[in-house]
Image (cartoon, rainbow, N blue to C red):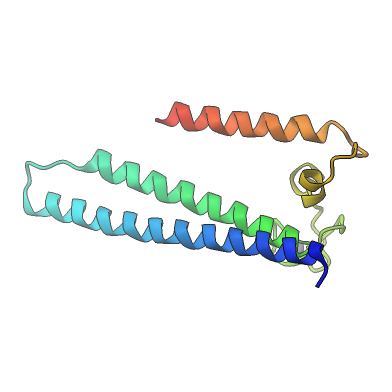
Length: 145
Ligand SMILES: [Zn+2]
């Protein structure tokens, strides 16, 4: 088996593992929300609204992260998902083959090659942009805490 395909499989396996962990964390959060809510129900003096909301926010964040990982898995397989009808399309398509929706290239372009290849890309502005997004996300994370 070529090394390239091996790496792909490995990446996919890692993404899937990460998704599974996040799903477990989501389940734990649901569980804790249930306990908190029940505590409130039993004792009117207890107010866990803040904790419950924080856990709901965590679930939302985890679901977004899972979505991102699913997109990465698709990308490893040379696919992307239509934002309108959710149909899987070839990564190179500019329009969804099913519903005809246009793919926003800004969103769908960061391909696995961007990470793997060291050589300069056709659109060099992509790399700094990806980094800027990372920093932004980190800043957001900090702001939320
Ligand atoms: Zn579509």
